[in-house]
Length: 183
Length: 246
View 1 (tube, each protein chain N blue to C red):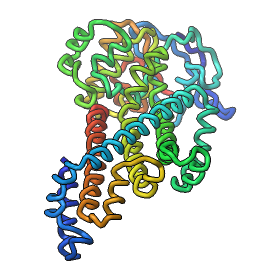
View 2: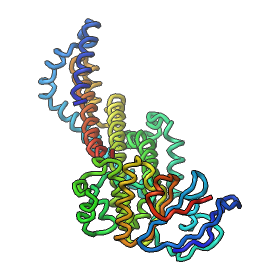
View 3: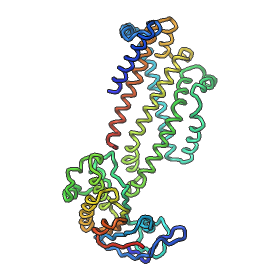
View 4: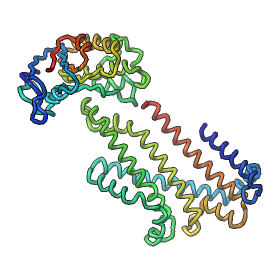
């Protein structure tokens, strides 16, 4: 996927200075900007729900959107939740993240941070090559967020996915790698 | 546990009121009521009445659930149906249930059918409206997740919508049962013998008519206890489902 001089248009107004991004497999691209600047609108441009100027290449509905409101289904165990996207060896992945003892718990028995980790993993292991994350860890504290990012970066490399990470948090962006600031 | 507490509170208040009133023919004490029960449970007329009421209640309740099932299915399939049903509910829900009694008597005659229709009318609008509201809420909350996880229609219904709706539907079934119980006893007390249905409410009225005050109160207490117990059973069922969702 590649964005070339793309900027969202709302009420006939271009929201920010157009940006160009080339996504590579196994890499996270972070879009950072103040609240209300149009970060989510850019994501909607990619998903085809917002007008924009510029060009978006390779936009073939091969992306998965992740928002911080996404949750594990509370009526099934964490393992069953994960199995909804792929029937793979979740024990191995959970062990890598030291989350193996929480796999058979119900989501309400896990902490917020653990639930966030599992939802992110579930999104990452979906069958689509591009993951669009809209403020995915805005609900967790800084140190937990930092830990989640560290694990997530490792898994992105392993799964060889292209990830677009949207945030308004400069500290968070600092840990993610390639950052594009919206102005 | 709540049911036991409620029963004890009722008995305590009952006993206090009985002492204050001081006339056991108007309000007998709990001790006199307890003495009445062996006689009551040895009376085949009472056992029959109790059975009749409970069977009738279960019959009406199942009929209501079947109607609700079709309402829900049609609501999912057709937005127009949902709109029409919601409008009907808004129009008919405020109508007092007993206002329909003469209408039903005129249409279906004076029989059990009148009572069934009355019970259905007392419950279906409110419970139907509630169930459609929770259905819409569930679709709003979980549809994005289903799309995101690329679940097919069958999996979405089976793994997402039905489990999310289970506790809410159970709560509505409880409301349904409670309303049916109230209306059934009310109808039995007022029109039972007319409707050729002889239930626990009718037994109570008959006991009052022949001045068997203790028997009347003993049956009244059973009506209260059945209400509390059925409520508790539904509460337990709902709670076990809700625990997983919090």
